[in-house]
Image (cartoon, rainbow, N blue to C red; front, side, top):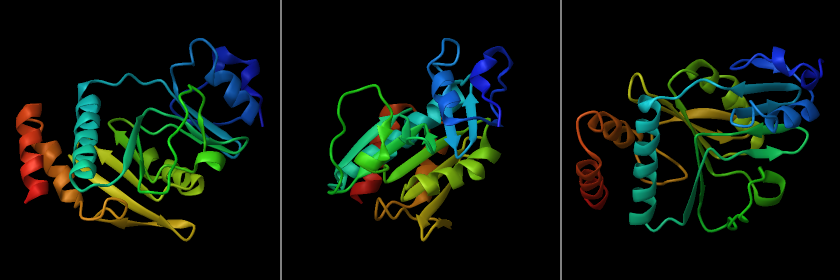
Length: 216
């Protein structure tokens, strides 16, 4: 295993490379890499530096809107987090585009810019990756990382197809589902239709449609 912190100019980004936990933490806080999105899984790290355009940003906003409105209208206790890091120190770290703590059992997080320690606060019930350039990795290695980190549900949003691939995590693995288990009653087809509508409708029209849909 190479201690990659000793050669910052030669670091490969947007791919998995071998690294110590200490190297990953050092690089994540180093100028030039401090804005990168970081992932670490038992001796391997990935730093994502790719630019993100409106395609990614729009679907990120739409998915947030759908989940937030559904939780609010169905009285599900929820806290949403954007681009927040979650780790089990020394072993794993992930930085999903969107994460939600859901239900009655979680505690509110402290106001800090340190990664969330899942051994103290638990993993978020839901993690979401918006896949504009990283679809293969989001469906593969990152899915395994989120399983090991302890999330209950993992969504991969394929922006090119306006499609959501959703996994329920249980018994050390995951299986594909079409209705959310952490947001009971939310069909993934509704999320996909919202993404499709967002291509031709403004946020006000989309919000009105979602409220009408959720309230029946």
